[in-house]
Image (cartoon, rainbow, N blue to C red; front, side, top):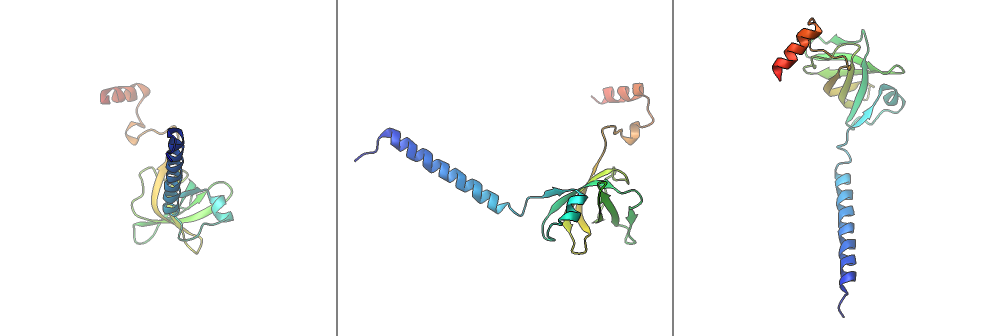
Amino acid sequence: MAIKAKHQRLVLLAIALVVLIGAALLAAWALRNQASYFYVPSEIVADPPSPDRAVRLGGMVEKGSLRTEPDGVTIAFAVEDGNARVPVVFKGIVPSLFVEGSGVVAEGKMATNGTFVADNLLAKHDENYVPREMQNMTDAQARKVVAETK
C-alpha cells in the first residue's frame, strides 16, 4: 500500500518540524550557562546570582569610590543605581572613558563576600560626548575637522 503524495508531504513536514524543535532545544541547553544576564545594583543586592554564573552589572560609578590598589593594576570602585550600591574589583586596563559619575557595564561574577569581580569593563558616555581633541574647538572648527575626515 502506497502513501499518497499529500500524506507524504505532511509526514516530511512533521519530521522536519520535530528535528527543528529538537535542534533549538539542544542549542538552548548547550548555551544555558553561557548567557550573560544583565543586573542593576538593586537587583544584585536583592537576589545575588550564584558565584559561578557570569553576569553583567550596569550602573553609575559612584563618586568618591574609585581607588587604585597598591599593585597599580587593580582598581576598586562601587556601582550604584540610586537605590543600592555594589562594590566592584577589576584588574586590568580601564577604558579611557571610565571616570567617576559615568555609566559602566562590568562583566564578571559575584564573589561570596558580596564583591563583584569584573573581567571586563565597558565605559558608557552620554549623548553629549565630545572627543578630548575636539573639546576646546568652536562648532565651526569641529565641522571643518569632521568634513576633512570624510
